[in-house]
Amino acid sequence: MKNYNVLLSNSVWKEQTKPALLSKIKNPKILEATSMVLENTRRALLADTQMNNLVYLPKLNLPLVMRVFPNLIAHNIVSVQPTKAPLGMIRFLDIYREGSPDTIVYPWNNSEAKRSHSTEMNANHVINDTISGDPSSVTTFTDTISNEWAEGTLFVYYVPVGGGNSIPIAQVMRDGTMRQLVDNVGGTAFSLVGAVNSKTKVGTFSISANIGAAGAALRWDYFKNWEKVIPFGSDQTFNKLKFDITSRKIETRSRKLGASYSYETVEDYQSEFGDNFEDKVVDALSQVINTEIDSEILYKLWSNASLSDTWDSTMPSTWTRGIDEWYKTIMPKIEKLSATIFQATHISGATFMVMSPKTAAIFQSFNAFMSKGSNVDSSVMGVGTLNLGTVNNRYDVYVTPLVPDNQVLLGFNGKTPEATGAIYAPYVPIKLVPVTYAEMPTIQARTRYAFEIVRPDFYAILNIAE
Image (cartoon, rainbow, N blue to C red; front, side):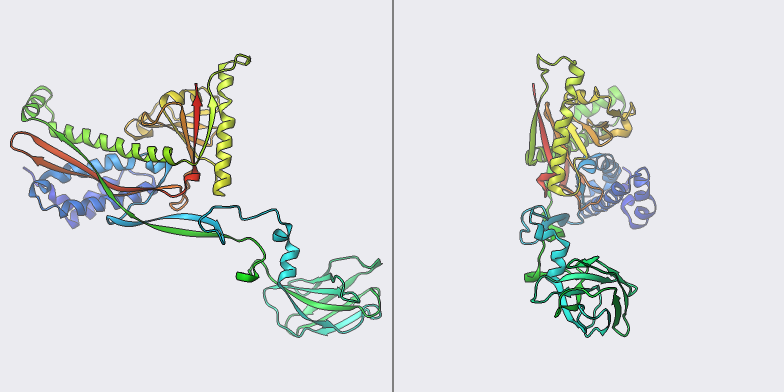
């Protein structure tokens, strides 16, 4: 028997085996993930001390990984984050308001004081000094500003007699020129021109008329830039949204599947059809494992979705516009659930729908449904899972017999690994372990991975009543 262990040797692996296996993958994210799990598979095969595994197993195992792993539905509806070891870390984007890290909440409330630009300024200003001269009797002012300023805005304030509300009458621009902010003080109209030299800290300006009552004053006020100098801690005066890349420890677990057959079956199959029966056994095992992985991912998304709604497919007796038009009333329900996902995540509404072939018939009747066409090979996600097309050019429609009829799963899957509500973390996608007994040969296939729901509010279920 030919020894295929050479496929795993360092030089052949890097120069021939791995490049050949990855050559047909065009999606860069799937390419990166597949490259990592191939390395994991190679290490697992080399670590197996049973010589009967190493003799021919790479010939079967490596192509099976390529057939199963890139076609999993996980690549389209959740984040795929391969791990290099049985114990690993997954990461996802956590968004929360400071003070409540365990709860995803809106970063605002109805308090105008929390959102007001003027409140930000009033809470963070630094009083520098009073400008020499009474504006009720002086119209030209030259004053040296005593304190330094950096990132922020410098203002001239009018300070009335008796300590009433001060009024900002001019703002110093970046080039040092002064911009008038109000056209009158106490009913007295005026115009103001001037400039501040940032190097000498000398400000010179003139006012066209005397303003205010005797004893009033002008004051330099410097406000920290609230966009760059954010007051944290006890000085914080506004709600603050925080973004964390959260890491979580995971442990991959094995799912096993075995198959037994008699020597007579092997002989009869090869005699009747002329094919290698063991290849057919391995082929069937890989298909079932593919189905089981897709089934577990879909089941957990279905079970953990935090949002739901119901649409009745039965056309009311009072409806006069026909069944096709009635089917279209499902879309407001879809859009409502998608909007609720957007409200919960602050990132996006739903980007995909998963449903059974029977349920898909409803959406295929829409003019807004865009089919992928008849090229099934290019749309296969897994065993029996199809990327059927899109609805409203917004929702990718995945059809699979692995989910219940009369239910639609809606979800969001971001374009980056951390923007997700669920994570599939494969370690070794498929490893074959042939075990031969005296009377009956047995082969075992094993897959090892972790799957975690990290944000249930990324998913919703629409129940269809009949």
